[in-house]
Length: 111
Image 1 (spheres, helix red, strand yellow):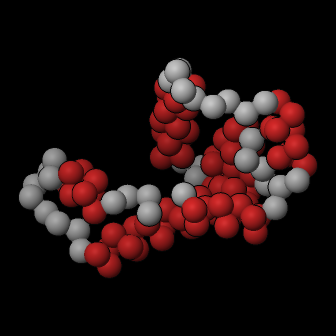
Image 2: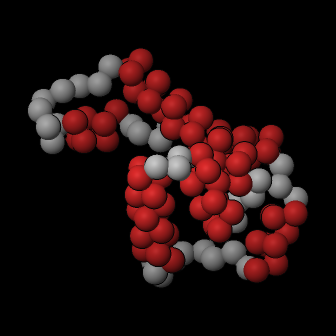
Image 3: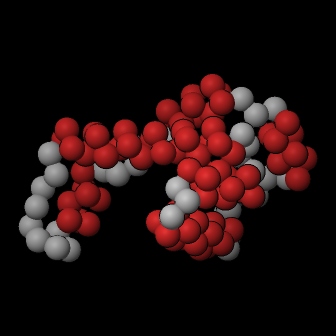
């Protein structure tokens, strides 16, 4: 699940008191999962630069550009955390050549 019921209610309550039905929340999470699968498939890699390109191919609009900017800000904030685990360059180059979409789909299911 990308968006929990609690998070959805917190976001929606900024506008007016509203609860999102379970089916609607499930549909929203399925939509986000499908978008992620399209980005990964288009990228053919999980390297950051490739994912950027895949995102802009999948969503070539202002929304895609805004999403990319937000993701870059979140990633920078993550790397600045004292306990952030940074992959080695050997791990990064190996992942580029051994990319497998079915294995990435399995990883998505674990997130």
